Image 1 (cartoon, rainbow, N blue to C red):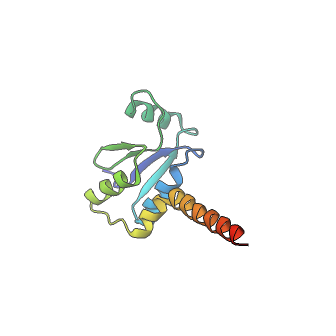
Image 2 (cartoon, rainbow, N blue to C red):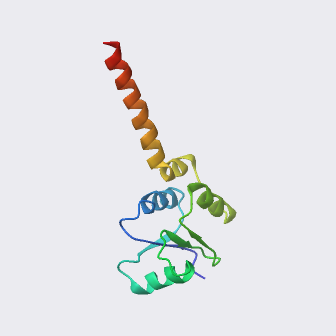
Length: 117
């Protein structure tokens, strides 16, 4: 049995980067397959997801799947398989949220400084 997680996705999916980053940082073996380049993979994703080409779709060595998982769901699944998910990996998974929080704080600081003049 292959011990790598299969990650089905495509380049325009915004969730692929965070998921690949979380898996890489957690030192989890995975294989990324672009469903826009592989028609067999695209058919497999539709089979898993009741006809929908929903990505990311992850297939685990035990045969279970996750489709469009949240960081929490993926972290929980990885931990159930014996992997450790570090804080850095968790943060990578939430990088978009962190970006918007930091951006909001910076905007608030700029507004405060402009109003103080």
